[in-house]
Image: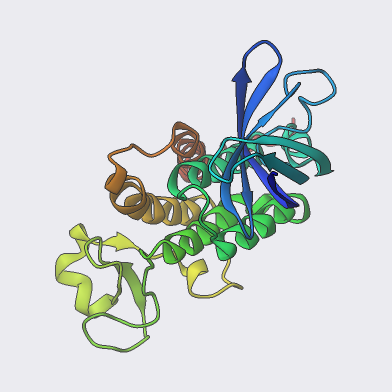
Length: 258
């Protein structure tokens, strides 16, 4: 007698195991973050399947539900390969997968995080220029589903929804401009794109968003387990910080043609 499941899954990570196998971490809607052993996972045929960010149709089988089990999969959407030519997109994809792999508990369903990550992966193909923005939005979903949600609807002091420009690093609640002015140095900036989907956003706003979610991820989702923010997540934020710094540099004056 054995236990099994099958369905759509996101590859979060895969690392070598033995001579040819791979220890795979998957995110599914019903089974949550789930591990499995892919026999032959390091082979030339299977390596492209088990790349972080790929969408696969997975099947897991074990004698007992609590065992590691064997996993197989068919590639549905090669997100990793599609992102390979764009460094920022690849950085965002790697960051999201590493955050999910480290923050979500094993074998506990978190459907909002699963569907949100699917949307993020799809958006990297449709709107790669907004990849960092998509990462921030997904991280807010993950934080909320883990019980650390931010309240950005109204000012924590006045209760109004006018001129919300900061977030309290302690409570995760929005703060209005006038109420927060005396404490501006201790508050986190709230980027406009989180309040208005149509608001224009660039590297500076993306960086504000990434710093905002990083604070709560580091303190709550990872801090509670005494683990640091994943290196891939830090690299993605550093890449956006470099873009923001470059955007602030004065453009060289164009010389008049001779």
